[in-house]
Image (cartoon, rainbow, N blue to C red):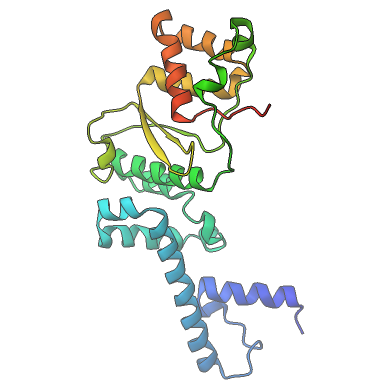
Length: 242
């Protein structure tokens, strides 16, 4: 008699790979009845994967239309490594899959944006740094002030025109997008190429002085601090306890 682990593996293989992997000695009912039950169960699981993917990408679903989105979704969820993926992370590789299928930059960007939105939503709670927290610091203390990235902040460099399914960005033509969740609401912040480059330096800066040096390397003295202020106001930095 096979072990529990072996039986589970055979059962999963049957669900994932079809009747050719049917475990004849596992069920009390005859093969036809057992297969009928397994098909119903497999269809339920497959439907759950498709629904979970649609829930990850509602704007992309609207942008592509149901038939096209459903077709590419089915191809995506039928990959072996997706079949073993939990539903919370099932959409992680969808943007890359769209790239492999030669979809346009607009569709791929929209998928990346929606997944980054989900990552921001699921990230740890943290108080954002506010301008008031540093407004009264002396110059030396300000330059030495620790810089910590807010856990909900995400950065995306864009490759194509924005989808109409992002109406809040209709008046912009950004080079990049920052997603932040300073409070309860997740917000999109269009960025120029320079603003994006400054934002990328936050994680490596350690102090406000280092971040300012990076900003000065990327822009002129008149605008360097403005870029940092924009990042603070957007909630890109985490408040330091004290």
